[in-house]
Every structure is written in C-alpha cells, then in structure tokens.
Amino acid sequence: DIPLTQSPSSLSASVGDRVTITCRAGQDITNYLAWYQQRPGKVPKLLISAASTLQSGVPSRFSGSGSGTDFTFTISSLQPEDIATYYCQRYDTAPWTFGQGTKVEIK
Amino acid sequence: QVQLQQWGAGLLKPSEILSLTCAVHGGSFSDYYWSWIRQSPGKGLEWIGEINDTGSTKYNPSLKSRVTISIDTSKNQFSLKLSSVTAADTAVYFCAKGRTIFGVVTPFDTWGQGALVTVSS
Image (cartoon, rainbow over all chains, first blue to last red; front, top):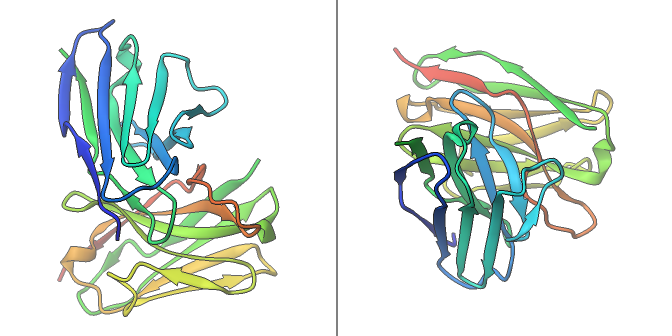
C-alpha cells in the first residue's frame, strides 16, 4: 500500500476564513489524487479529481493543487454548508487508499 | 446518470458471512469496475475490492482471504461476501463506481447509499 497522510485531523475556522488541508503520499502518485466531502450521515461526494479538476456543479471556492507526493485542498471562503469531513484518496494503483480525514467545524 | 442501490443483512453474529448486493441503474454497466468500500470509526474509509463485467477482480490484500466479489450481468448487479466476520468488521459498507475498463483510472464518482452492518453476539 502507498500510505496517505492527511493533516490536520480536525480544524475549526470562522465563516469566510480560508481553510487548507494537506495530503502527502508515501511515493510519487503524479496527479492521481481526489478529494471528497462527507457531510454528517451522508455519502462521500467527489469534489476534485486529478489533484485540481473541480467536478461539475462544485462551487469554485473549493480548489486543489499539487503533484507527486504533496497535495493541498483549499476552501477559499468557508461557508456554513461546508461543515463536513474531507478525505483525500489516491487512485494511481490498487489497492486504492484514503487519507484519514479532516473534520472541518465552524468556530 | 448512474445510480447505485444496495441492500443486505444489517446484523450479524461473529463468524457469520456478510452479504451485500448493489444494483446499477443507468449508464453502461460493462464499461466500469465496481467497488465495495467500507467506513468504520477506527479505520476510516477502506477499499475492499472491485469487479468488472467479465468477473475480473482485485481485492485489498488486508481482506483478500475473506472477500469474494461476484457479478450478475443479467441483472446489472454485483455482490460482496465477507466471511468469518468479527466486531472489527462493523462498518457502513458502500458500493461505488470506479475506474473504466479502458485503462483510464478515475476516483469513485458515484456511491450507493451505504448500509450499516453490525457484528455482535
């Protein structure tokens, strides 16, 4: 398995704040990295694929960057509906693995 | 637009076999690999395995000895069996649409609604 280390495990920010989550892969995965949002009690929703490609219908305040081993997920202006746990996932080779998640809360 | 609907037994005793099925509605069933993923409080999201319409499978090495994923192309359904369950297998289990069979790797863009499976004596 190629490990994914996601940080922080949780964060608390105010509405309108910029929020950044990082994900580090144990080896080069080029850009085969996705980000998901999981609201409480809901199914994970794919937000970003290929490290930086926003899925259709996803608000533009969400963005992703990075390649190789280091990746970043950003919410440019946190909104109340963004309260969720966010996961990174690598999909270069099986077994596909997920980061441990970052729980985002409103301060 | 693909939709996934899953079902199966929600309460098991230790050593029993977990059995879940996922029906695929819409889209092209034969163009993708279909996966099972589980989510437990202790281990987060864990990919279990995948199958395509020819029956070709890949499993997570951590579960491979206990997992069987099968497919019924006549019904556009795929199923998960996990044997010898223990409390550690208590989780929400999801089916999901994965990569294409044409060599294009993609993340999981469509998920089933999830099914809580509890293992308890």
